[in-house]
Image (cartoon, rainbow, N blue to C red; front, top):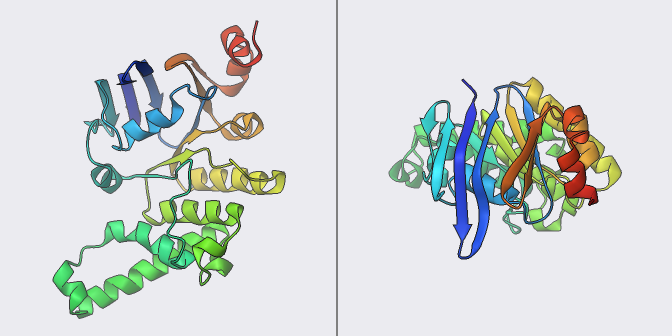
Length: 251
């Protein structure tokens, strides 16, 4: 059984059919890419998987459990984490504080324990801080820990957001255009980081426009066009698919 199974998922916004009966599987331990022209439905697919939108039809199963329509905090608690096409950091908080937010998903202390700073709550906060710093070190942004997120470069903010997603120790990490706005060197570092994440046992689902990145790190690639899946195969096969070539290069 695949870690993530999407079957016959459809989503319409008014008169626009964003997704039409899309099905795909993400095997555990793999890096899977989702590509397609602008407006193909890629980010909508991510929103459906992570609970930010509800599908009109179809099933989304994570570890065999249908999560379609579930709220984002519930899907996150099950072991999914994501980054966003548009950065979602808190600019006036430090980089470390932003990463700690991702770790608080694992928190068990209640409001009263935190309010009165009980010994258990203090231990939990120390554990959260340690996990956040470990995620930042893994992502290569530990030297930025004390700086306000809003003062960081775009590439640095991208890396901090990825560290925040990793802090929750997900089983499935969804990356929505992580290379957008990055220069060549930053993109190379990102590719290395994604492969190291996979080597940690984390499955990665990646939406991206940078074809060199996708073809270099993905085990499989699914292609969307106008809300429909037109290909789903290893990178080399997708590159040679006539329909994919037509979509990207024209007749």
